[in-house]
Image 1 (tube, chains in turn green, red):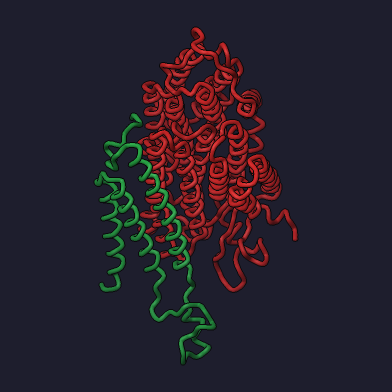
Image 2 (cartoon, helix red, strand yellow; image 1 turned 120 degrees about the horizontal axis):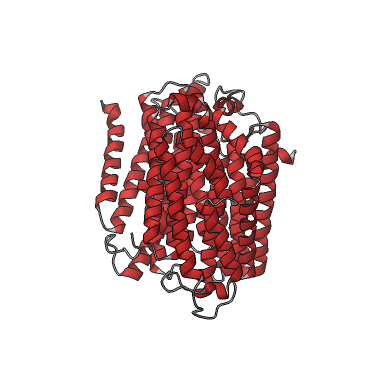
Length: 122
Length: 517
C-alpha cells in the first residue's frame, strides 16, 4: 500500500489540475492548473524510475564499501530522470509563454476572466 | 564520413542551428537574415528530397542518434533499442515532402509582408519547421513529445505575432493551452509505456504489444488517440482551429495546416504501427464519426462567418473531416470490419484517397489562405461585408482564388476532385450515407465559396488598390500550378508518393523489423 502512495498522489494532482483547468475562469488559475497536471505527470515519470537500493550510474562517485562485482547490477538506467528533466524544461517554456500572453491579454481587455475575453466569435 | 548516411540528422540540425543564428544576423542586416533563412530552408528542402529518394530506393531508413555506427539500432550490450532512433518509411517520406514544401512556399510568401520583428518571426518559423519535420522523422515516442512541444510553443507565438490586435493573443493563448494539455496526455502515455515495457521506441513497443493488449496499453491508447485527434483538429475538439488559422499572420495559416497534419501523422503512426491489428474496431468507427462531425460542423459554421480567414478556417475543418473519414474507413477495413468492404479491398482505396487528400487539402486551403492574406495585406480589411470589387485591381488574385475554390469544392480539372472522387467511391462500401454526406458537403462548400468570391471580387470598384506584392504572387502561382497539374495527372502523385505511403501503413511488420532486426 505504502508503495502505491506516489501513484495515488499522481492521480490526485492530475485530477486537481484538470479541475482547475476546466472550471476556473481566471487565466492565471488555468495556467496554475496546467502546471499542477504537469507536476503530476513528472511525479509519475520519476516514480517509475525508482529502484530499491539503486545507485546513480557514475563510476567516479560510488558509495564506499561496495564490491566491484555488484556495482553494475545496482546501477540504474537514468532514462526516467532524463525524461523528467526534459519535461520540466519544456514546462517552463510553456508556462512563460502562457503568462506573457496573459499579460498582453490583460493590457488589451483589462481583465483575466476567460468568459470576458471573447472578442473572437463562435 | 558518408554524408548521405547522416541525412536525417542534418535535416533537423540545419534549420535548428539557423533558427538560433537568425536573431544574431538580424542585428547586422535584414537582407542577410532573409538570405540566410532562405538558403537554410532551401538546403533542407534539397536534403529532404534526397532522403525521400533514398527511402523509395532502399526501403525504410533508420538512423541512430549518438551511436558510433548510425545504422546499428540495437547496441551490442543490449537487447532493445535504448538510443533515439530516427526512422523514415514511405509515410514519413510523404509527410516530410509536404511539410518542407509548404514551409518553403510559406517562407517566400512571408518575405513580402513581414516588415517589423522579422528576427523573431523567422526564428519562430524555423523552429516550427524543426518541430514539424522532427515529428515526422522520429521513431521514438518521447522524442515525438519533445518535437510536439517545440511545434506547439513556436506556433502559438507565431499565431500571436501581430500582438497589437487583441484577438491574435486570444487565439494564441487558446492554442498553447490546448496544445500543452494534449502534449501532457502524450507524455503520460509515454510514461505508461515506459513503466510497462521499459521502452520508448515505437517499433519496439509495437513488437512488445504484438496483438494482445493489456489494460495499461488500452489506457495509453485512449490518451494518445484523444491527444492527437485534438491536435489534428477533428470536430468536437476543433474550437481552437478557426481561431488559430483565422488570426495567424499571412502564410502561417497555411503552414499551420501542415503542422496539424503532422499530428494526424502521429495519430496514424499510433493506430497503424504501434497498435496495428490489436486495435478494437470501435476506433475506426470513432474516426469515421469524428470525420462526419468535422465535415458537418465545418461546412455549416463556414456559412455564418463574415471574417474571410475565419471562413476559410472552417472550410479547413471540413477538409480535415474528409481525410479522417477516409482514413477511418481504411482502418475499418484493415481491421477486418464490414465483411464485403474488407474482402473487396475497397479499404485500400479509401486509405489511398485519404492519404492523397492530405496533400490536396494543404494545397487547396493553403492557396485560399494565401490569397486571403494578400487581400488583407493590400486592403487592411478582413470583413466580407466591407470588401468588394477587388477584381478590378487584383486580376491575378481573383483568378487564383477561383482555382482554389474550385479545388476545395472538388470540381473536375483540379486535384481536389481527384482525391474526393476516390473517397466518395470507396467509403460507399462502409455505408452509403457517408458518401451522401461527403458529396452534399462539397456542394455546400462550392456554394459558400461562390458567395464569398462574389462578395470580394465582383461588383463596383470601392477603392483603388494595387495587385499583391510579387513574392506573394509567385508563391500563390506555384501552388495553383501544382493544383492544376496534379488535377490533370493525379497518377504521378498516386504512383510515386501515395502508394508507398499506403503500403508503409499496411506493412507495419517492416517498420518494426527495421529496428528490431
